[in-house]
Image 1 (cartoon, rainbow, N blue to C red):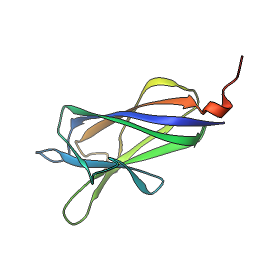
Image 2 (image 1 turned 120 degrees about the horizontal axis):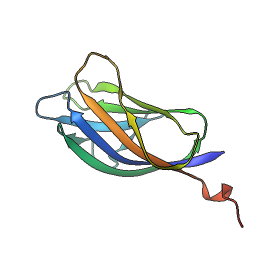
Image 3 (image 1 turned 180 degrees about the vertical axis):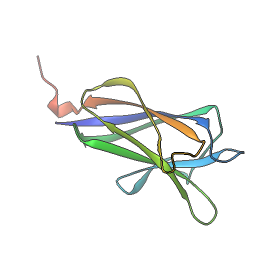
Image 4 (image 1 turned 180 degrees about the horizontal axis):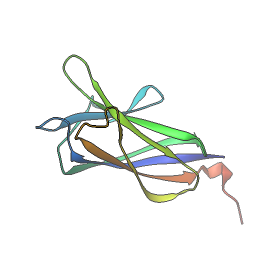
Length: 123
């Protein structure tokens, strides 16, 4: 069964750079957010609303949403939000699985999922 994944918000508890990070999200090798900009600035103890949906996600399969930090020459892959959608619902939270576990930065992704409309049961 497939579902729609809604990325609701991104929270930064500790940024990787003192003045904040210029972040963007990648899924399946393609930048998905922010849609009309290269990145969004996010500082420690801040959060951003994302409100981005990805349809036709296969349930019971590991999902990885990558977090990248934009830099002048080479962007830094900070890590991935990895989760398994085995139920649908709201207000799920996934912590960032960092590339280097000893790095101090910390992010989490808020998300929800729902069954695609064509798979809903009609009563």
